[in-house]
Amino acid sequence: MPNPQDRVGNFKKVVITSGPTIEPIDPIRFISNRSSGKSGFHLADEAKRRGIPEIFFITGPSFYIPADVAVIKIETALEMRSHLLKHADQADVIIMAAAVGDYRISEYHKEKIKKSEESLTLQLTRNPDLLLELGRKKKKNQILVGYAAETRDIFENAKNKLEAKNLDLLILNKVSPENPAFQVDRNQVYFVTKEVIRGLPKMEKAEIAAHVWDEIYKIRQAAGNEST
Ligand code: CTP
Image (cartoon, rainbow, N blue to C red):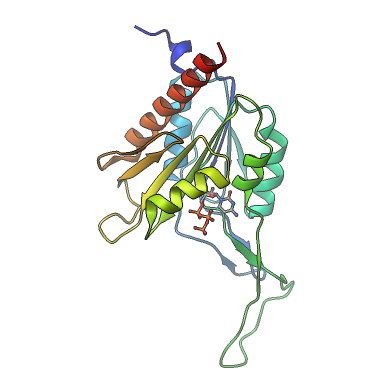
């Protein structure tokens, strides 16, 4: 029997982002996405089950908030970024399960936008790519995990993303009508690492979370073997 400490690879601090981000348009409205926050919730729960002492959970608006972990609630991508940067350096593992909005409203309207013309154009500005930033400043021995939702050329795109963002593991969702990935309990994913692409059967998100942590432990173990 491995001792529980071995199973967590002696991880002390992990950061998990979860849920959607929202970008306000005016005091009444916002743009966002369909992320429920279930995957992030299960990842945090599983980390807790494995006895990892410090779990920081940075989440956009979601009903799925794990108990007994440090919860940081944010709304926008820029707010998520500032909390991530505070915690990233000390983290042994960072998992970016959040569906971070790629764009924000260029100019927030302080007053409610009243309807007038037949059409209304909103201008959007690119948000920073948080995963890319984390990949660039990744510490030695730190494990960085990202998610991808793709609809075509999925393996090629995933391999490129893994490399461009300096990731150790990418959880790839092939989004299709049979596998919507968002707001469902069961999902089919692929694990993409530098060495292999491995498809998992369709399963509950809680089970996927356990597999993700098993994979993270394997990556840690392989890195440990390399450096000895
Ligand atoms: N992500 C991020 N910052 C953003 C957007 C996404 O850190 N501004 C992270 C998510 O947390 C997730 C991964 O990037 O881990 C998702 O990437 P995805 O949306 O699939 O693709 P992108 O890298 O944004 O590229 P593209 O839109 O070209 O597919």
